[in-house]
Length: 147
Image (spheres, rainbow, N blue to C red):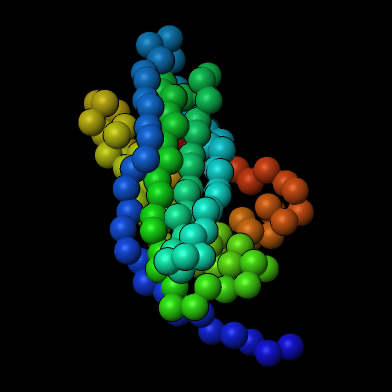
């Protein structure tokens, strides 16, 4: 099997959507663990050899003194559009690894601006994340906050 190199450039990134709310019923004196849910998707445009990749993160109510949901999207321009099997992996593993730090920083800043200690989402192994998705599993992250 011949390995093909696909060259692409990172064109732009933005926060596509976000929501955040505080839960006043939650005691800030308690330690807590959160399990944010991750989402991934992409949309290709063969016409201009570009792909829009979305990474989303969501924390449902009841796990922490806050809830949030945010989606970041990035535009990636390819020299040559990969075949579909390669494109899915490149978008999830390579493009996801480029975009996720922007999302992590956004959540940390959001919680800090709400008067809370920054919520530091751990880095993601996007190779493992991709393998979970291919197996039909729902990936999640664990974040532990000590009092």
